[in-house]
Length: 143
Image (cartoon, rainbow, N blue to C red; front, side, top):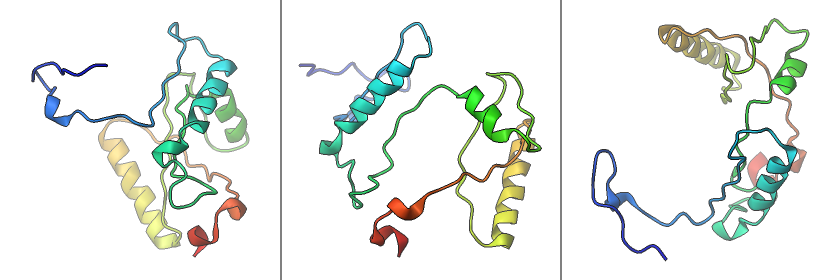
């Protein structure tokens, strides 16, 4: 078992070391895409209940998940017929932004976000409302 940390250097400071209970890592070292890697990542995630991944809501957990490569074909499919024109893979990014339900507040937040993106000399390609199924939430989440 590793018991001694490196000395403080650059941005590293051993004072900030702590256990990483509940962290799993699966990858293809050559960067090759594989459904097997995704299946293995889900298997790792399913074995993390000891870290509290069931959280306060035993039906939906704490938001623990897996990080995968950008699924370009999926984004092409869900943006088809919209005003979002995707560039080639690797030339764009995506994000999840939880916006207010109030129309005025949502418009303000979108506008503010787009201003910041423009300041960074980037372009917002569009917005997509992600479909949800809240029937799986427990009553404590819906309240």
